[in-house]
Length: 402
Image (cartoon, rainbow, N blue to C red; front, side, top):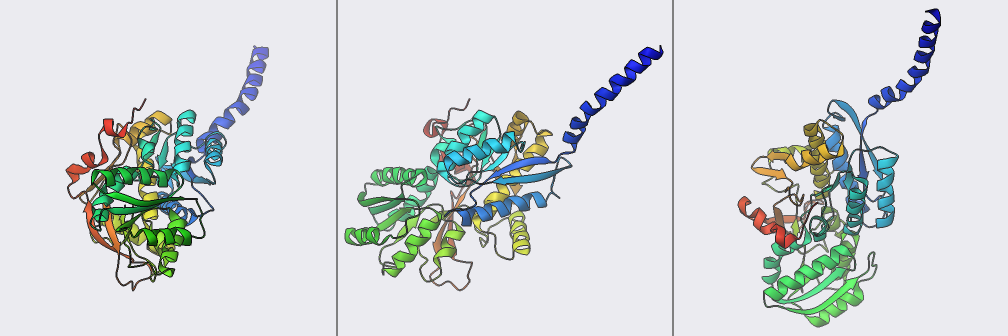
C-alpha cells in the first residue's frame, strides 16, 4: 500500500507541471490581428483606420466576452509581405481573427491567405470588386462599397457635365477596376472616352498627364487615384491653372486625401462612405465622432469610422458566437446586425459584403474650416429597399462561395 501511495504521489508530481500551460493559456487575452500599412502613401489613411479600431475596443473596456482583449498590429508593406505577416499573426501571435486590408492589391492576396489559414478576415478599406465578387470566400467579410457599385453611384454626376470623359487611374487593382467599370458605364450612356492614362503608384509629377488632359478638352476628368497620389494630382491640377476649367470626379474620396490637398487646390465631386459633418448621421455615430474628437483632438475622418464599424462588427460577433473558434465567429458575423437610428448595418450572407448607402459630396466653394471640406449633396440610393439592387445580384457579382 505504501509503495502504491508513493508511486501515485510521484505520478501526481509529474502530471502537475503538464497542467500549467493550460492554466496560462486560459489567462491569455483574446487577441485580434490588425493588418494595416504603417508606411507609404496609404499610411495617412491607415492611422485613422487603426485609431477607430482601437477606440472600438476601448469602448468595450478592452474586453470581449468578459475577458481581456488586445490588438496586435503588423505592417502591410506589399501583398507578399502582408500575407507573411498574416501567417505570423495566426501562428505566432495566436489571433482568432484579423482586421485590415488597406489597399486592394494587398486585400486580394490577404483574403486568399485567410482561406488557406482558415481565419476570419474582415476587410475594412479595400474596394476592388473581386474581393466579394469572383474571389469571395467564406472567411472574408468586406465593409467598403465595391468599385463597380460606387462607379454606378457617381456616373449620373459625371454625366451631368457631359459625355466626353478622360480617365486618369492608378496602374494597380483599385485604379484598373475603376477604369474598367467607368468605361462600361460611359459606353452604356453613349459617351466617348477622349483619353486615358494609367499612372504608377507614388507618381511625383503629373504635369505631363495634365497637359494631355488640357489638349483633349474633355467635359469631365474621371479619376481613379488613391490616397497620396490623388492629393498630389489635385495640387498640381491647381498649380497648372486647371481648377475650375474642367470638372473632376472620382469615387471613394478619403478625408485625409482632401485635407492633404489644402483649401486653395481642393475641388471635385466624389462618393464617400461617411462624413463626420453629415447632418443625417444617427446618434450612435455622432457619439462616436464626439468620442474620437475627445481622444485624438481632431475630427474623425471617414477611415476612423470605417475602422470603428468593422471592429465593432467583429467584437460583437465574437460575443454573439460565445467563442473564439473560426466557424462560430464566421456564423456570428453572418448573423450580426447593428441598428443606428434608421440605418441598419449587416453583411449580406451570400457574398459577405456590407450593404451601405454612400454619400455624394462636392468640395465647398469656399472652405473656412481646416477640416470641413464637403457639402453633402445626396445619400445613395435614396431608398433603403434599393440597396440589394444597387449592389447587384449573385449572378452579376459572380460570388460562388464554398
